Length: 208
Image (tube, rainbow, N blue to C red; front, side, top):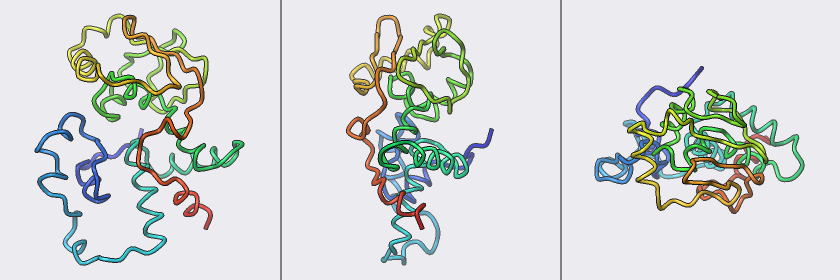
């Protein structure tokens, strides 16, 4: 399973904004965007102008990094989005939001999507009563996601649940906090996705 293994804080610095890839560290003064906000690389400081292609590329890279997806998989998601009815850009974001690791993050079981990915990989969640350990598994309306009974006392999960107690899950998810069960009630809509992504730029990039 391919994944990004280098320093993730460099990704935030490259995009010039917080992508919240390190969980609670992103909310402290230890965040790289606080201590070293400049883009990485010795030549980056001299680049003042960005071409149209550059803007489109940066938007695609930003979306990939938010969701922890590499290029080949991201391109596959875009092709799937194009085949679906509606606008390709919005379909793309809906597909990315429907990943199981993102759902686990949205429900507050993890402080970052990377942490959620690890929890899913270790088999802490079931979908419709069956263990699913594939972070890229796409949930659909009607599916029920449950934190396994044996995983509810894990320190990392308990700490995340307590820290995220104030967070409201998106309206396309129904969540029973007492039983730690969530149900997918709809396909994610654009207004449900609070990430600053201009998906039309990604569509323009792939349409070239």
